[in-house]
Amino acid sequence: MKTNRKYLALLFLLIIVPVIFGICYILTKLVVSMLIYFLYGDFIFNIKDFYLALKVAFFGIPTGGVIWFLECRRLGIKIFGK
Image (cartoon, rainbow, N blue to C red):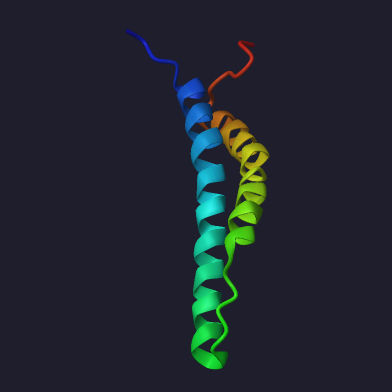
């Protein structure tokens, strides 16, 4: 069975890149909150930050698409069949 690499790469990038954006946002916010907690005794990480991380993750979808397009061009894969 022949698998089409360009569609596997697209699926990977459109799923993984938004997840990475969301996780990076949450981890960054958590580290900053811990530093502020150790310095000032006030922990600023709350449930609204998870909602914001979900909003930030959507920026990964067009970013993943652009990365996929550039990788296909670099590898010489014809995206549209021409």
